[in-house]
Image (cartoon, rainbow, N blue to C red; front, side):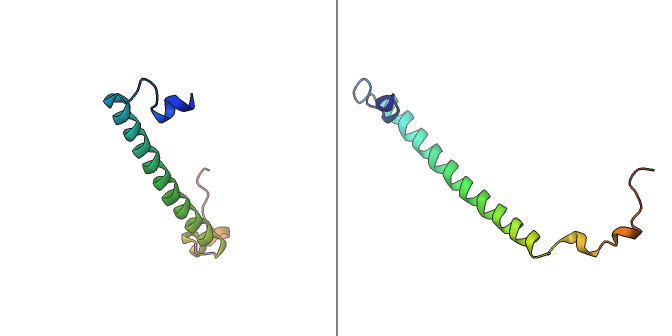
Length: 68
């Protein structure tokens, strides 16, 4: 299985090598996206911990109920 993932089956078939390069690039793109989303999540979590919320200005006891 590991050999198949590394592209060692059947010698150096150009199609297999191209697919392997494409998959490696896709993995790298997904890892980059994961890091970006984690950083955004960390920033949002930090903002909520520090009370930097848009909802802070709403007076909850005087707010009208959504459903009556």
